[in-house]
Length: 395
Image (cartoon, rainbow, N blue to C red; front, side, top):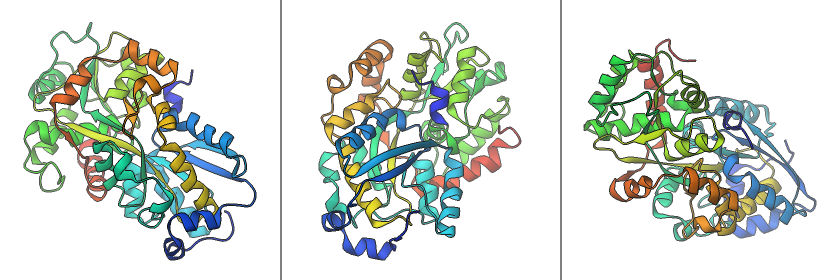
C-alpha cells in the first residue's frame, strides 16, 4: 500500500494560444490527434494521483493508439508555477498535464500559465454543467476556464484529536485558543499554501468568527488574522505539508490538528494515524469545499493538447470517477453525479466502511457549503499568512 507521506510529495510545433482557441472543440481534437502514440508527462502537486492514477492507467490501456507511456512525478504546489514559467520562457515545456488543488491553479492563473480549455475546447469535453455535482460545478467556476475539475469534496475545516490526550474537546474557536494556551506545542497545522487542511482552516475561520467579509482576506478578515496570530504564539512550528502533520499526530508528538474528511479517513486507513482518533466541528462551522483540477501548461504541441482533452473526457466518465473514492483520501471524491460507493473498487468500499464516519453525512446535510476564495484572493491570503502569521516558524 502506498504510504500517505510519499504520495504527497518539448515537443516541437508549439501551439499559440490564439491558434488553439480559434480551432476549438471537437474539430480541433479530431484534427490534431497524433498519428503515432505519444508519451504524457503528468505532474501532481495535490496528492491527486491517489485518486486518479488507476483511471489514467486505464486510459493508456484503452487508447494504445494515442498513448504509449505515461510518466508521473510529484512536487509541491508552491514550486510549480516557477518551474513551468521557466520552461515556457526557455521554449521547452516538458510537463503535459498538471493535477492541482486551488493553490497552484491560482498561482498559474495569476501568471497566465494555463491553456484556455473552456470555451475554447468545450466541444471536446462533456457538458460539465450537466454532469457535475452542484458544488463541483461551483468549484469549476474558480478555474476561469483554464482547468477542469476532476475530483471534489466538501473538505472542512474540522478538528482531529487523540481522545486519550484531549479530554475536553474545544467546541468553539475561543475554546480552541484556550486549549492551545493551556497546552503549548500540542496543536499544529501546516502552511496553507501547501496544505488542503491548512488553507481550509484559514478560509473557514471567517465564518466561525463572524468576520465582516469571508471572501476578502485584505479588508474582511480582521478577526481571523488577529486570531491566527494569537493562536500562533502557542504553535511550535508550521510544517510544509499535511503529511508531516499527520505523522506527528500519529507518533504522539502532537495531540490535535485541523483536518478535512479525507485527511481524517485516509491516514487512519494507512495506519499513519491511530484508528481511534476522533473529529469535531466548531460552532458556526461552514464547509469550505475543495477540488482538484486538470490544467494544461501553454507551450505544448497541438497533438498533446488533443490527447489531453480526450483523457479528461475519459476521467469524467462515471466508471473512472468511481476510482476516486480511493481509501477516503478526498472523501467522497467523485465530482460527477450519481457515482455511488457501490461502484467503487472493493478495497475502497471496505476502507470507507471501516474508517468512515456516520456523522459526516449529517454534518454535510446540516452545514452550509461555501466556495473557497477566488484564485486571486487566495494568492493574497497565502502571502499574508506567510508574512503575518508564520514568522520564522515555517519548516
